Length: 98
Image (cartoon, rainbow, N blue to C red; front, top):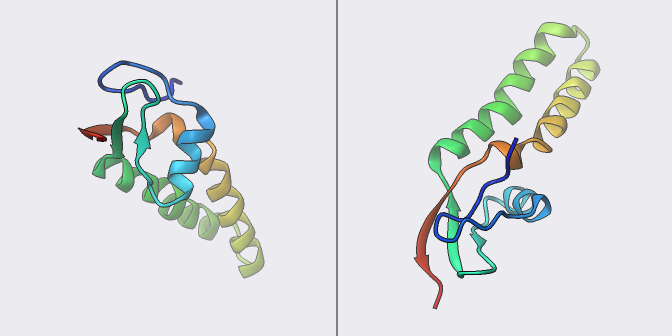
């Protein structure tokens, strides 16, 4: 598993920066070396939604019959997947910041 790198200078982003970007609503990342702004791709947004909402929902309703257990499984699965998202999400560059 490898974190995303800048499209221009190939500098790796830190895990915390990528996770913060995801948790703040896909805030664009800015490369510290070349100042290129990177934006989350649409495909990554769809994949994130499927991994954090749809799959946990299906798993929770198939495993548990009690609503409280369904909610607990949904939240645990969703939060657990969220910590792997920085390795899965992909970014694309936009114009450099000026």
